[in-house]
Image 1 (tube, rainbow, N blue to C red):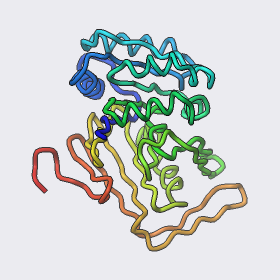
Image 2: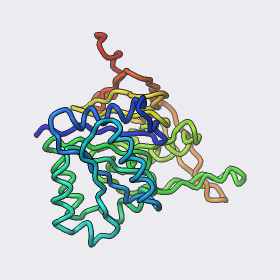
Image 3: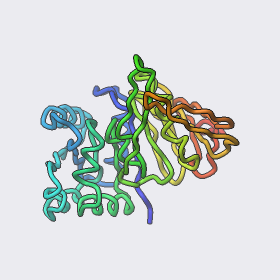
Length: 271
């Protein structure tokens, strides 16, 4: 099957006619079909306000059909009518908010299954902030980073599973999340961590991604590590000693192979 693209956004993307990230999403969503865009604001505590903002920008960018998928409970996520609505779109946009809410309300439901099947058949899916985190098999659901107590403890949950072996972290540089992503992957060095800055995204297709947008994407790969030790201090913090991790930093236009875990040259330039 030919899976659709995943546009995974670090949050706070520009919502204007010139915004590179949302322009890319609209380009993908309207490329082969006029089914329109479905907005899934389930993660947000203010879904109507969030939806209104995205409806406006997507219509301003030329999309005729933009509708909200109203899903506020697991009962909704099992509703055949809502699943049917999902399948009528060319692309789905998952808003920010709380990724745990997405997992709790949608995970392992008919809607989750329908979304996965639609993606495997070519549907384009974008997610921003919490909507980005949920797309991996694993996700950070809580991180106690109270600096005054010198405490760091990261809790990992289960995402939608569209990308195996990855943890995605958002608002990355802007919120100083390097330590929490490193902690998240230190316990399982086969999992790769991807930190995405605001107004920046990765476009995932066929086992590699390309960076879109203004800032930077960081890839943390512990598969080559020769030493990892995790200890708990008296205050509950997880303290790390590790060696041999690979770090990759990418900006607009650069590509990364998720299978070989290697940087590819800039788009249009041979390796």
